[in-house]
Image (cartoon, rainbow, N blue to C red; front, side, top):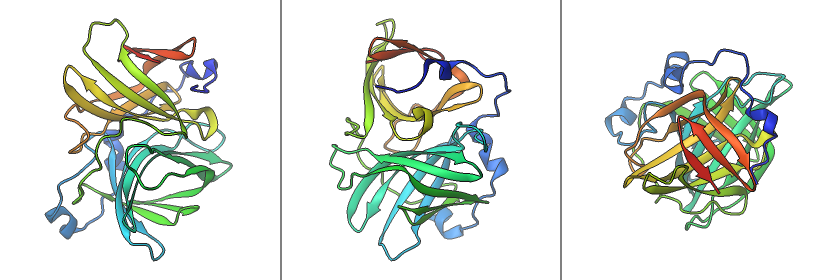
Length: 262
């Protein structure tokens, strides 16, 4: 089950920040002409695209699609949520994560999506230290890597997942009113306070989509991953625009969306 207290769905009184597309105004881009010249993949205009560099001797590569929120010390609002995938030493992986302050430290929680042919499947229940340093995000502890902000990069995504694996609360999605043709998958993180972050994909009317969703003070929002392989639907949904209503064993999602999660 999606283990969120019902009270966590109450809209806060603080004013929501602007959508994730404004993050580039806050974080300077890396100046790397070689990356720009060979680029063909980005997470789209509503998320920040990062490439991954190991801080140890591992061979590999990957991307991170990051959605920034309003988290700050003394709250359980994520500072950032992300979807990541790539390859370490020839082994493929795919994960979802969130970083939340504990005192003045930003602590990361992540779980691998598996069951779709991925080689690596692990769980990270708060054993990641996350530091946002300008255009770089450094992750140490159970991981040892740096993420570098780019406009785009040369990357071929993994095939679309159709199951979450055992570390997530998994939901199947259909239209709430039963009028739209389509279906979807939602992988909701269990690790971390309030378990507020999820990855979703599916299709509506024959058009595919993928997105990352999480929470801010004003409520829930989500942004589509618009890169090649993730789907052509490319929208963002502001904080508080998504309303979750618990029903037995599931949720109805209303507001900007009209979905049943079962």
